[in-house]
Length: 109
Image (cartoon, rainbow, N blue to C red; front, side, top):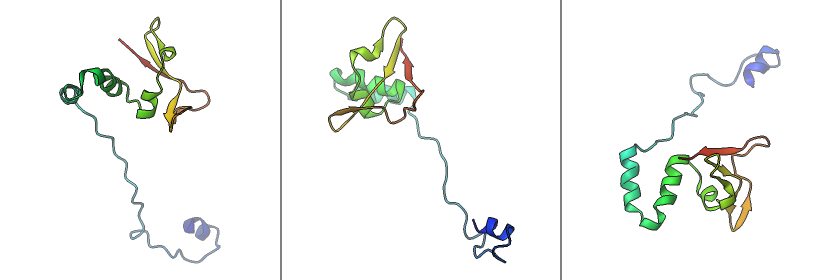
C-alpha cells in the first residue's frame, strides 16, 4: 500500500523498511500417511469402524462430510461416492468446499 502511495507521489518515502517487514506466511503441504502407516492406524480401530477409517484415508473427507454420507450418495453403477452434505451440530449443510458448480465425487473400487 505504501509502495503504491509512493509511486503516485502521495508520500515521499515509505515508512516501512522492506527487510524488516517481510511476509511471514509460509505454505506447506499437509503431511500424508504412507500406506503402511494407514494400515497400522486401521488395525488400531475397532473392526466395526475400520470402513470409516479407510473411507477417510482414501478420500480425504472431513469428519462432517463422512458422518453426513447416506446411501443415496453412493452410486454403485458408476462406482462413485458423491459428497452432497456435511453434518454440523446435527444439521445437514452443504459441504464446506462446495462452490456453486462444483460436485465432489470420489471413485470407488
